[in-house]
Image (cartoon, rainbow, N blue to C red; front, side, top):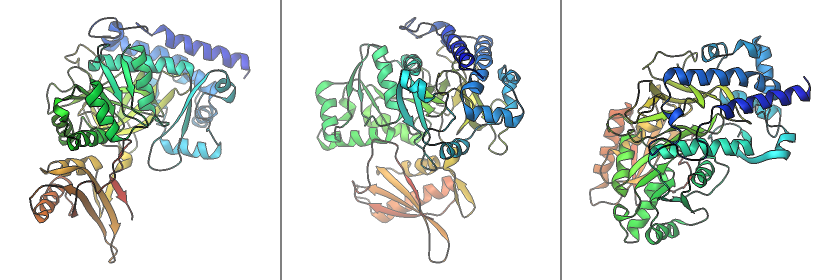
Length: 473
């Protein structure tokens, strides 16, 4: 195919995305950044998705060797996938395929539509996947992506209740991770003042909260817990601070009842979160709205369906599940020049509810938010569990510190065993605390675990994604 043809196909894709952006320069109302899109009907959302799918398939075929090989291998052409209903013809793409492509085509792989020429003309920033296994997948995004990304995040953050009267404190090291950078550019679009906290230690950050009175704290859930404790050690009360919103990402939080309760109690603030991934949803794929926690027993998160198609599939065979059934998240990203993706397996378990939300949005909601990635499944002597189940168990024991870790090893008899290492500062005997943790793990995960009770501040703390499970088998 000629360069001219590829340029025309790219231009048509960009025009299609631009045609479906409403209120790009500021909020259209008090409740909605983009009233026309945020309150669109199911039929309107489907029409937008279909228009974008029709434009993106030839763009992917002509600009991504990875996609072209996959189309050819499946015996498909772009005109075979023209609507949401046609997506079932395309088997889901999982990260292992991208890993293999990155190894075979270093350093960037061929799954992106960003080539070296485009990168030199309007490259913006390179990010990499933050998964704990396999080869890191890098993604080079363009200046057009930055603009699309900041707009999508602003819509989501407006839904959370963030306004120009707020001051946001961004506690991140600003590495190659999508969360903090996307939020930073969205804050600028929203005219919300930001205090960058990169490079500061926790003592300095606690001082920032006390002195400059930010109203929104932006970080991982683990770090929000740690910073609150640092403030307490300094004689400051997080509950009495200026923080009204805990805006978290990078780890599950809102869908883990005990973790959410611990955070909101510590700070006397409302917890909101982003959900997404570097590969297919670098902006806010999922986000909290004003009604996300109306019922504490059923936390929800919206998915922005005019920008992406979200599906749930079974963990065996990856076939679509019925509405209301639990499945793994799959994303078709329709909001990127550099990384549109067809049916990428993000891989978190949830259930979808397409009925309208009390906030007025008709975009599908994830019931219980997102709290268990399939890649994280633990198999211990045939008993299967997820890290979030262990987190619920540990957090259920009163007095347990914020940090903990789960260590899995093989003993001298060849038996796989689990040890929970927890911190506790109370006067209760360690034996009693250990028994309580054992009982909670046994009740929730149906597995026997040893428990070590440690002094406070024994375990490492991090502002990035916490690695709480160490599998040493």
